[in-house]
Image 1 (cartoon, rainbow, N blue to C red):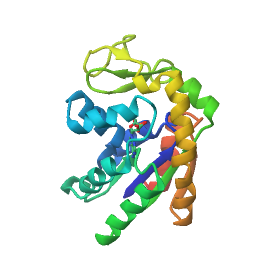
Image 2: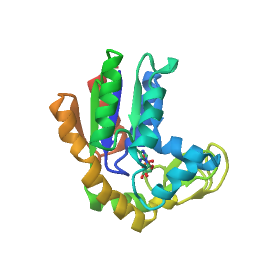
Image 3: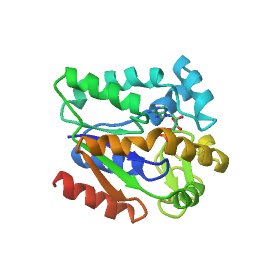
Image 4: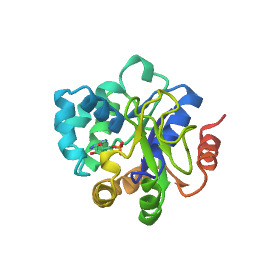
Length: 214
Ligand code: AMP
C-alpha cells in the first residue's frame, strides 16, 4: 500500500496521513517534518531548507528527491508507506516514478484532499504547532487539553513561521503553480482519488478507509 497525499498546504494531508499510518501500521513520511527536524538539529540540510521554507518557497528538488528515494527503500517501508508533502513538483514525481520502476514498484494511490484557498486561509489561522515534538493542533478542530500546551510533551504551542498569514498566501500561490499539476499527472496514471477536505476529518478518514479496505 503505497500512498501519496496531495492537496494544498492546510488541506489536512498531515492529519490524514498520521491516521492512516496508525491504522495500517506503515510509515508516515513527511518531508516537511524531515526538514523541520533538520532545522531543529542545526544540520546543513536544515540550514539550507530553512531559507526557502521561511519564505513559503519550495526547497530545491535536488535537496529532497534522494532523501525520499532512500527513505522508501528502508526495511520498514516494505509493506507500504504514506508520502505527505512529496512529490510537490512534476520533476519530483518523475524522479520518484523512475526510482520505483527500477525496483519494479509503483505508487498505488494518490489521495487528493480538496479545499479552496479561502477555507485554507481560515483554517491555517487556527493551526498551532508544538515547539518540542512538532505535534500539530487546531484551536477549534483539534484543541489541546490545556490551551497553548502540547498534550504529548507539555511544551509551548506556537504559530509556525510558515503558517503566518502572509507566508500562507505565498505557499498557496506556490502550490497552484508548482504542485497542482500533479493532480493531472496522477489522474493520467489512473491512481488519483479526490476527497472533500472541507468535511469533518473523520469523514475524510473513513472515506479513505473505504477505498483501502478495513
Ligand atoms: P509541509 O509541512 O509539507 O507543508 O512543508 C513545509 C515546507 O517544507 C514547504 O513549504 C517547503 O518549503 C518545504 N517542503 C516540504 N516538502 C517539500 C518538497 N517535497 N519539495 C520542496 N519543498 C518541500
